[in-house]
Every structure is written in structure tokens, then in C-alpha cells.
Image (tube, each protein chain N blue to C red):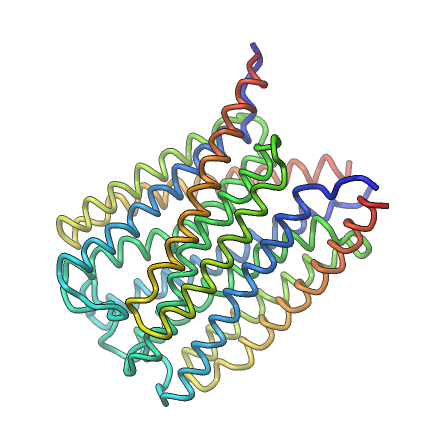
Length: 139
Length: 139
Length: 139
């Protein structure tokens, strides 16, 4: 038995992340029906607006997360599984963000912070990986 | 003559998808001018708001679509052209979504459903491809 | 000393682009605090709404930019550094867009245009690169 390549681990993390994000979009649709807010309106009930913000904020974080995850996965090979592990942490943070925000807007901070920390970790791994690859390419 | 690699097909699909999305953004700008809605306002006329929603909803779907398309393209090699074909279906669905929504908000369902079906197909191919690659890597 | 691979250059550009985008998100959070706009509201003060639009419009452009940057980087090998150079131009354009929009909404055009020009250049390189790769694959 050989090790599973890090790219497969990050592909699995990517799939779960976009599914969690897709689920948040379904929650917006359900809130639209529940609070009787006809399209194209995006306001009208605080609970609907919270669902919209959870979905939108996760989109904003996702476009930072996915590039950093994959640059870290491709270039940082020292602990090859670490980018995917930080990806799992990011997913956990975003699920906590959703649960916190729907309970009360002021409870959204913890999940946001955990996911931001995961992004910061991926940023560091991406930079370290690029510096190592650059050194190897120009050596 | 050898076959065109699946990655080239999916690259073409990706370019068309982002161009369709970019076109929807131009439509928002045109509606802003037509209905005299000064930036930064994002509300003020139902037709402008529909254009905004078409653009935004396609963005929300695009960040699910592109990762699934590429994971399916890289890992699912049994019918290598199938991910790109589902990508074409996704594009068709989003164009129908735009046309339906601009005609009447309640007509946006069909196009949305077709694109969602394409995403579901890509999700299945991505999972099957990853399972096959995982099996091969650990065999 | 050998040349740095174009993929490393584009990875660096990608990291800087998502960091600039992330910074715009922090500016939204700061404006939310400064103008006392409680979540989940996304309106209430023109300066807050400008920060929101800078962030959102950059997101809209980012999902067009990153796929084009990477397709151009992978397929256009004639001047391998050119996609990354256009990426730097895109980043400059988006920073100018932010500064212009925050000064006055009607000053957002120049930066938007520069970034759009960079995207257009990447689109052309991506298409040229794909045509060349297609020709090579079927020759």
C-alpha cells in the first residue's frame, strides 16, 4: 500500500467545501419561501437576510480558500497532507459560522475566525512552497 | 490523428462559461444606465434587480461548477469527454436561466434545474473518478 | 541558473490577487463598524455601500480572471511570462478601481477598464494557446 497523493485529499476537501456552500444556497431558497420574499428581492426579513449573508460571505471566503488550498497542495510537499487538513478546518469554521449567524449575528465571529485562521495557514504554506520551488528551479 | 485531450475540451468550456458570466455583468451595467440607477445602489427597479440576480446567481453556481468540472476532468478518465459535455449542458442551462428570469422571475426554474443537473452529474463523475484514483494509488 | 517556471509566476500573482481581494473585504468590515451598520444589513450609508461594491465587483472580476490566467499560463507557452505580467496589470487595475470608487463612484471607470483590458489580453492568450495545443494534439 502506497500513500494517497495529496492532490486526491485536496480534491475531496474541495468537493465537500463546494457542497457545503451549495447547501447554504438551498437554505437561502428555503428562507425565501418561508418568509414569502418574492424574487428578485434580497431583503425583507432579518432571518432571510442572515441566510443570504451566510451564503454570500462563504462565497467571498471560498474564492480566497480554493486558490490558496491548491497552490499550497501543489507547491508545499514537506507535509503533503497539511493543506488538506487545513481545508477540513476551513470547512468546520464555515459550518460554525452558518450555525452561529443563524442563531444571532453577533455569534458569527468564532466560525469566521477559525476559517480565516485556516486561510492564513494555507497562505503561509503556499508562500513557503513557492519559495522552495523557486529556489529549486533557479538552483 | 489522435484524440484531443479532455483538458483542452474543459478549458474551452471554462472560457465560454466565464464569457457568458461576463456578458451577464455587462447586462447589469446596461440596466443600470437604462433604469438610471446611480452606483453604488443595487436596487430601485425590478428589471435592474433581475439582471443583478441573474449575474449573482450565476456567480454562485460558477464557483461550484468550475471546481467540479476540473476535478471530474482530471480524475474521471473512463469517458474522458463527458465532463466537458456536462459543462456545455451547464452553460445552456445558465443561458436559459437568464432568458427565463428576464422574461419573468417564475420562469427561472427550468434553466436553473438544467444547470443544477449538470453540476450533479459532474459531482458524480468527480466522486467516481476520485474513488478510482484512490483505489489505484493504494492498490 | 534556469528560468523560473511560468506556473510559479502565476501562482504568485494569484496569491497577491486574492490578498488584495481579502483586503477589500476587511475594508467592508471596517466601514460596517465606522458607519454603525449592524449585520445582516448591506445598505444604510453610501460610503459603506461603495466599499461593498468594490469588494463584490472585484469578486465578479476575480472568477473571470483566475480561470483565464491559468488557462493562458498552461496553454500559452510562446512568451511564458506574459500571462503573469497581465495578471500584475489586472491587480493594478483593481487597486485603482478601489481607490477611484472610494473617492467618487464616477472615478471607478479607469481602474475597471485597465483590469478588463488585462482580462481581454488573457482571453486572447488562452484562445491562442488552446488553438496551438489542439493543433499539436491532432497533428
